[in-house]
Image 1: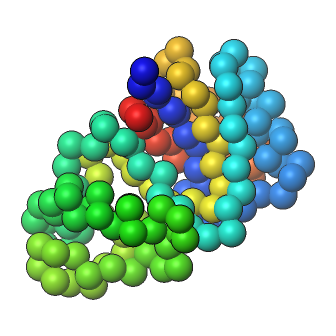
Image 2 (image 1 turned 90 degrees about the vertical axis):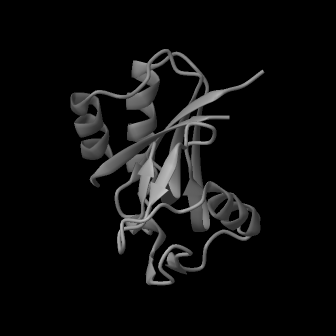
Image 3 (image 1 turned 60 degrees about the vertical axis):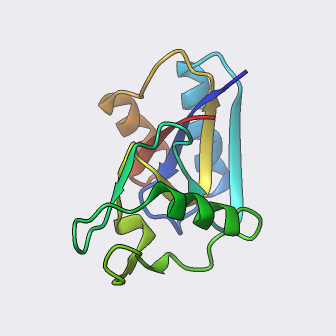
Amino acid sequence: MSDDVLSIIPADPHWQPDQAAADLAARVVAGLEDVRIDVTWRDVLTAVDCGDNLERIDCGLCGGSIPLGWWGDLLEAHCDSGFPTLDVEVPCCRGNTSLDALRYDWPCGFARFEIAVWNPERTWFSDAELTTLAEALRQPVRQIRAHL
């Protein structure tokens, strides 16, 4: 059986909230959804990808398409240790860029903090809900929807 996960991550991949802000944001999410919610802090940057929803990755430097196999290999290589840096040489133009500067069709991101909602009864959080979550965390947020 497959799962859908709707994640909230900080817009700044390196940022983490204090415990009180994380607890408040988790309560906000729990008030919106009656499902399993995981709140996770990580020591290193971790990919928060969209799983099977990923259709395309484009390079921010040359606009070229980046093979999904390259992305899959990269995720596998860093699944246990995380990402010490987001700096990368892209295969399309051999240019140096940041992984968070690539254009992912469905959104993907990187974070050291994540609130994950398992099998939500919605596709996305609304703009108003995202604003409420950003206020709770005191940090702009992004959402990622994964199909696993």
